[in-house]
Image 1 (tube, rainbow, N blue to C red):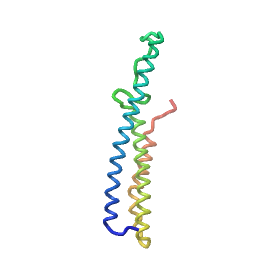
Image 2 (cartoon, one colour):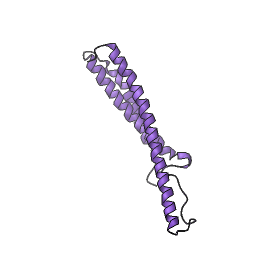
Image 3 (spheres, one colour):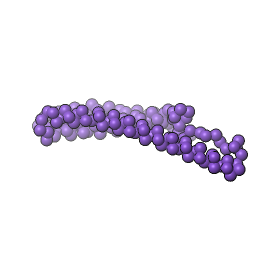
Image 4 (cartoon, rainbow, N blue to C red):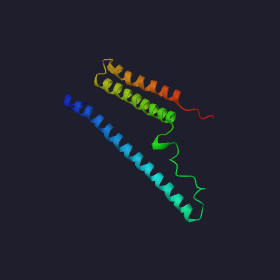
Length: 137
């Protein structure tokens, strides 16, 4: 499949680079979305004041739903989401590593290398379920 060891090394170095760029991009997109929601809330408040509604009766600008002061959201929900995402990524990477190693040398049982990230991913998914906030209240 790969012609030399340099191809494999190139792919191995490409994965963290893509992850870093994707993480930075995701942060920028999230920040822009929050700014847009705050801007729309301000415009809505101004429009209500222009129509003659008493400013004291209008609730003050509150952060977007699920976010508290300084953009910090519901701690348990955010933690559960983080654990769930990390778990899914690790399960997928464990399966991918197992398939990759198995396709390289099908006669050997080195596919078990993928068990470590896969099992860590399963553990994170279980932790996500345990941390998930109670919605029955």
